[in-house]
Image 1 (cartoon, rainbow, N blue to C red):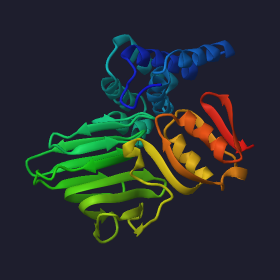
Image 2: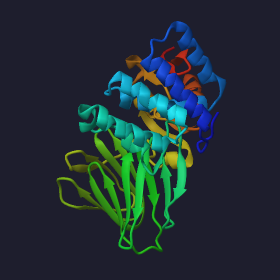
Image 3: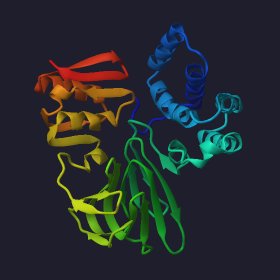
Length: 318
């Protein structure tokens, strides 16, 4: 199984692009789909390569079919890197479909970001200022530094920032619900369906919501910030910092909510049946092996795990 910091080789990404062309822009037969499943299972990095490349198919959906395929074929022939490939895609999109270019392409910013992770990846990095940063699964950030300030933009997903206390420049953080400012703090930001979850472990953070007065957030506080700028202190069923140590730690979390959390860390489809969704889950689980997490559930709850394929899994009543 790939480690959190591992990445597919260029050859595997090229193979994934080839499969994307065959499956989404040709007319695949059942044998082609069987061959694709065999390729996925043939190397532990192949699913990760597919996860990264399949996002391109979503972005290409609005382009004319011929242009979509030419874009992918060209990237494979030239063996250009992932970021340059996407820059090419953006250029071709502007020239080929103004309607597509006018809407915000959800996947392009994250794939062009300074640092990003695919599904199941977690990554540690250090900014040029010495700050320590962690990205959770399917996340992306941009970083910039000037003589006057440090700046981080949360493009997608979840990030932990432990800023360097020896750097006196203010740290500005941009999110879709507003801006934050700090000098020396350890904070966590997670985009969710409601807007943004903010947790502070150390230091002093000021939240500038898009349509509300600034709010000082102190160590130990966790806020849910809504898209309209309002916010509220919240108590969670899980430790929001757990993933930074590679675990999912929960207390009396409804199974449906728990499965939604686990699904963030594994490619494919993971569903929970309504009849078991309110069962309660407690414990600490290792995120490196989501398959083991699902098996552990069958030992503590009256549920079963049904694998239609490796990437299509359902949790139902035993």
